[in-house]
Length: 334
Image (cartoon, rainbow, N blue to C red):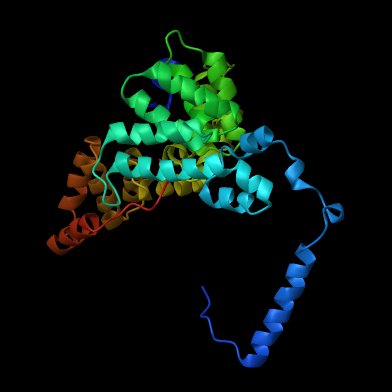
């Protein structure tokens, strides 16, 4: 499901750990006594605190359905009642782990999408929204969109941000399109902190898709997604600052976000950052970014790069190419 980075001209926009030491005998006794006191404090009667076991099993499993494995284990330690209720979800986490290994061919497993899907579906049947989303992704990639959407709907209804995001994007691609439902679920996921949903919601607001075109809200969600590490949002945030669309015009902020996107592998950002460096006389740095952009398919960067290379010595040219060869993108969320 490829998405446009920025609205086209036809859309009405002009933007194309500490070391451990062994305790002495005295220290060991002190720690033991403290631990005993701590345990005695935990050994309270039910009247001394809330009775967690009174929470209905169906409500508990619904709350815990989007939990990852560490959170699920922590919840299982609250009381025996919770441990018993959450057993299916713990089993789902094991199935989810096997499914990912089959899907990606990791951990000594050969890549096998059929076995991956089977593991994900078994995990989904035990109530894990994480497994629902992963099973939905395989269905979507196979073109079985109805099956994918059905799983995304279940995950979304249980409050899983990834499920809400995928459901929203699916509705944008549905035939017929369900724009209002798409915006609803993208907004739910965005409020829940899902950065891809924030980016997609910003695009919809920028393009005026279903909702009225709102550049201020679009820029706000671009910025949130950019701060969360979403590279495409970094690039668009830079453009917002450059042209003062939804954000106050700021050359400094525009340069900051353009460089962040470029350093994380965004080819258009590498091209534009290279141009900016060239205009400031930073020839060596400009060549590196333009060369990276060229390698990523930005053909327009080639001409500018060649012009600069003619002005550099052979040593400088070799140095610039070596820097480009050894360049690695910074971690990011795509």
